[in-house]
Length: 380
Image (cartoon, rainbow, N blue to C red; front, side, top):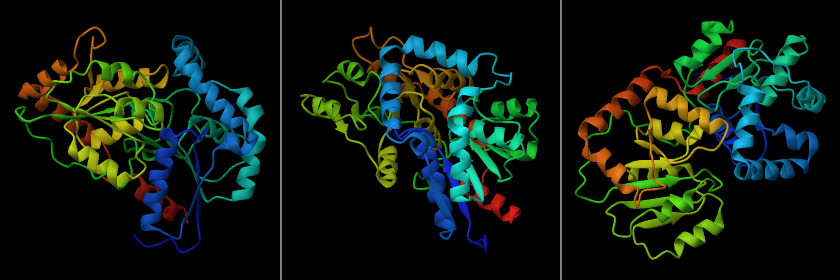
């Protein structure tokens, strides 16, 4: 692809500064674009920090505490706020009041040629500005979950990068044209090498290697899960502790030789090596982790879902047939039996790989970063 002649700026808009999927996707796209077009300026701005400074830290802390302390309440409020009667359009006047002025200021300051939203809130505000004919800059929604909720701006957004055919159909029912929608999956970093062929049967005579992930903050019920691992198990578990140092130190003190705790891995090359080393993953249904594992064609076992987004992700992924729920592991003495039975059942593994292959067949072959580059060229 020919480089763009004029100097261009792409503004990425995630939300909050906690290491979430919104930031991972923005970074993956930004680095993918700059790899091919190094002269393009890619900037990422969290609109909450930009607007209200240190309040963002407090909001992030309260948000995480709320999810873990009152999960049912969070789930109820999340669904009623953005997922009740999801096909209907909804107006969020409070967000307009809080962020409209700041987003206008940001756009005036940065003067971007393209805007990429990896979070719904800035997408909503930008769609509102386009509706009022106060914004002409092209905007792309890059969805980081396996569903679309009501906070996302839709009608007035120029392009949509969705994760499945169902999401594409949802947007078409909203009046979005076919050529505006790209079924990309959730974008992953270009250093996560994609597994192009289905995995073959795995012999269970040698030790299976399983990765346990709880999200970048080491959240969820990992500690409880690890207690269920038998020290005599043939399975070797690698546990991603994220930024949770307390969890890492606790697991490091365990006498089990078959448990290896890992601190937060920032290097995508190292993460790629880890994926290639393991046979399957035990995780929560967070968008980016699931997407990386689908590209690696690794069997995915779900042990826990946080309220809100992850709950809905899990139901959608179950419908696609690309995950397995680890059921009853809290009551069972060991969780290894469910994993072993999966790998011993050759038909089950083959069916899993067929469903993942079917999912990949519906994705566009071009990299999402390349699509953005081409859209920018067309607009030049």
